[in-house]
Image (cartoon, rainbow, N blue to C red):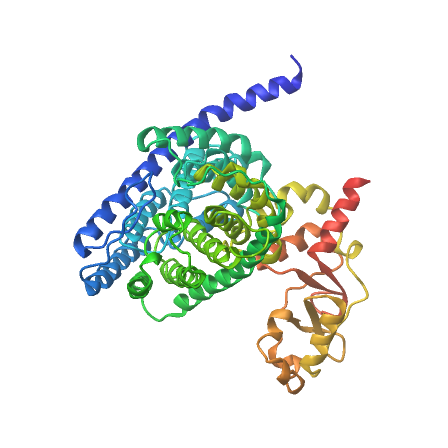
Length: 578
């Protein structure tokens, strides 16, 4: 037996039992969340007279409008208050959609999630979703299962790297179980952490944990797909691909609107001058009012997605309005801090966009696709764009619907949506790639720790003066394709920095009358040529910036160069290739 075989056996001996245990607990947590939501939904229905449709695998697809609309709004407000008191009183990090907190714990908190977080997240989420909040199960189960992975790793005294792996495996196990998508959940655990990268070490533990959790969950709730894809369908019409590409384009553009609205809502609720635990009450009450006009936006919305597959939304205007209303409802519910995920709302929005586009396309040449096909592809393309998780989303939605024959057009739509959304994502804590994550900083330290900033910096630096008009800075940035400029005084000392984000504070037609010094950032993080690239990168990561002015000394601060993250990684890969 060679050394690779020995290492493989040791790896499996270590991770198989850990992954199985994570999977069993994640599957159990998924069952608790699933039945908790059902219990609160039943109570909500009894108190309001409202019945929301469910997919065939989980209940009936019928809908009943509430007997007492005022009671619905009041009950939703009380549910928001209960969720807020529970969350902010016991585990403030459990606010909102949860997946982002798990991602942040992986990158920035050394894989640490407190033991109190999982039960708080489960309970608060069951209350929020069960009482009509526009949220889904993904965030709660991701944070809950990730929390158990973190707690288990600490109990076993695993090193920090393995604690992060256990946390990510929990994400995959929880999502793979509750959505009956074990392979997609496992890949999502590796993909959800980055915008354009994978955490490859997570995949094997996540697959084992996800399949274990799925088998436990499905053995109790049933083995059917969550959605019933209604048509015996095989994609055999390449001429329809441009239509699917157009759907991907629309999904990407609406995805940008969704992410901006969602993050704007979070910022607005943070500025709201009321106690934090009251904010979910406000968000849920407003969601309830919106739900009186668009009842489709209440709850996770899977039943409405099923109805869309069956042709319920033949009028494209209705489907589009419902999609936009869901964006508002989710921004109000989850953006206010009420506990719930954003995956289900994203699938809902994508499904309605698919139904709307089918309504527009159905009489066009070479288009003969069923509405169910565009609904499923819309779901896939939309979340792949806003979640920046194209591979796992393709697999997950296929597992959730059984519509595997839709993979060719779905890949087309996903590619377009992913490109259009660019860096926009619903998950604030994602980082672009592994080498930009604080979790992997130590892996590059061996090289970056002995290379000096002076060896990688650019010496020919564009700069502006505080007295220069903003138009001068804007023109320089536009002409040279850069996003920031150091600001220097008459003696070439760095006194500030002006970034593209500063420019947007001033309307373009007013920039000629505003000086750089009026809007620049004055507290500038700098480096010196003698500092190591490791230290410079650490400053960038900790302050979440992309460039550092290089000065001759911290005392004099005369500008001698500039260094960006790109400069650091170019130098790193240059040295590695040597």
